[in-house]
Image 1 (tube, one colour):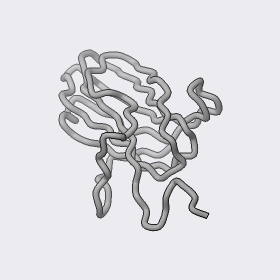
Image 2 (cartoon, rainbow, N blue to C red):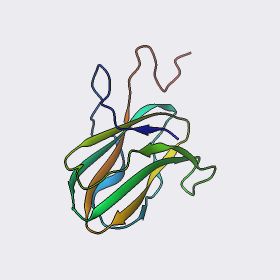
Image 3 (tube, rainbow, N blue to C red):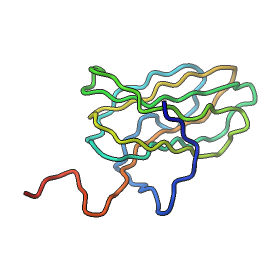
Length: 137
């Protein structure tokens, strides 16, 4: 399974209002199984986890990104996990790049320890010159 905490290479991840939101920014204090969100792919994407304040009692927050064919989770696959988030990871951003072939995505968050972790997760497309998600011929 892929794990990622690196900063993206040259260029900028597109931050747009239409990015699919897998986890609204907010406090997580227990395990979460997110709802399936339609992402209209296939595409090369960057899944971005934005972290805020992490309570000192949080011993680990693991975020797995999953995909499925429909909103009931048919043929679920894992696109990977972010490195484990701990109390010292306040106000950081994590990136996980994936080539997505499923129309729906969600996050599954495993929270250990006590206290809140502020977490938000969005899916952003990575543009490629000469490539789009529509056919012209």
